Image (cartoon, rainbow, N blue to C red):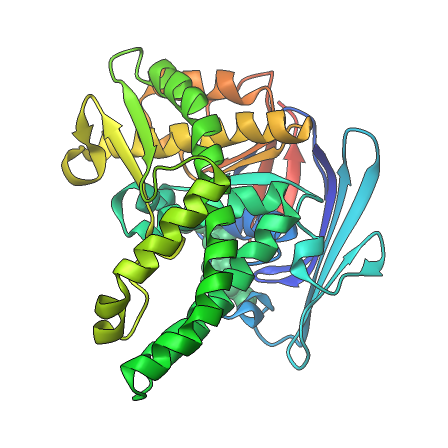
Length: 363
Ligand SMILES: Nc1ncnc2c1ncn2[C@@H]1O[C@H](COP(=O)(O)OP(=O)(O)OP(=O)(O)O)[C@@H](O)[C@H]1O
Ligand SMILES: [Mg+2]
């Protein structure tokens, strides 16, 4: 996949932008607060239909304006495609693929695949299990519309089940009604677990390989999906059902569902220690980067089209050896790397970002 062109109107600090990019590595350089991250944010928006940063999407509309627009022209393996997003102060955002408006975000999944990495992604390793579940969910949703549907269905069922657990009804009454929600929870939840187990199984060998490469073979990574260990879908369903039954008293007491894929996690081990608890900052950062680069590889395997790689501000955090290795790795994808300054290299394409403008620079 390649981005040929991006156009922005009133998007954050961009009034009007119209710029073409190159195959290979596009270096996006500029001082702080000039608009580098905003540009990557706009690109990634077209991949997942959401902002990585804004909790309220209207935040992306330029101060003092009423609407914002992103137009992205991409070249996929066999066809060209155009994604447009329109944000308005007063109405809901609309997303068009080739001028046809989509009704559900799930229709966007798989249209334009991108991997985004910034120093913030360290939270993938360091912080809550929720961040690691989001990592799995975003990836699998991009390659499977069914998974995207399963996740939203599961959330609704879970919400209803929890609501029921919180009511003051008699335990016996609840037990009868809860069966309806259990059946759906087991059905969607087991499929989610199966998808995630497969994802980790596929990701692992690549993550281990990339990690070895970045650490010059000094460290050994291991990934493990926590939660149910059964691998056959029917076995997962049976076990999940038994676990729900076993935990009913506890769930009833606490007023929420204590087991299921919404509580699962990825365990990350480096040289036999849990990196989340005991890893150094540098080790954690390298693992986070390895996971993302492995994601790029498996997304390629899964879709047979190389996704776009967006690396926000990562170079400054790496030593020169790892930087060099990273650049070598990136040539396989169309890559966008932001930073404040880069040494000149004739194999790379340079763009200068200045106060909401982007200019191609010849070297
Ligand atoms: N809705 C908006 N309207 C106008 N300007 C905005 C809006 N949202 C953010 N900005 C501004 O855009 C500017 C550029 O932000 P951005 O995060 O892209 O900077 P950056 O080039 O990535 O900087 P850094 O090197 O510090 O990461 C910031 O000064 C920010 O205040
Ligand atoms: Mg930035």
